[in-house]
Image 1 (cartoon, rainbow, N blue to C red):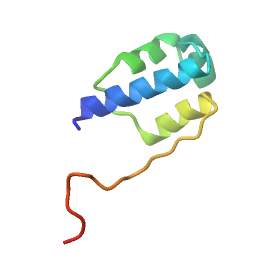
Image 2: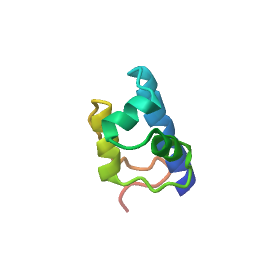
Image 3: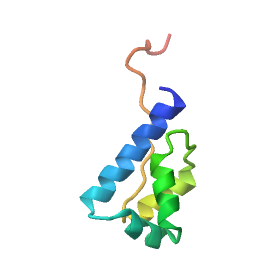
Length: 80
């Protein structure tokens, strides 16, 4: 995966979570104590490098827990 695909995926996941919780961008801005323009720019920027701490802040703003998981790749052999 390239960085931009990862960022697009993260942005989409955030937007889906916001929709499921009926949170507007203005709601997120209030909860994050940032401007609505900053929320919009973050979600529209497919080159953004999300930091874990920032993702955790956004998760908290949505009343969610952030989970990061590493999984074995399906296309690579197991141990040699």
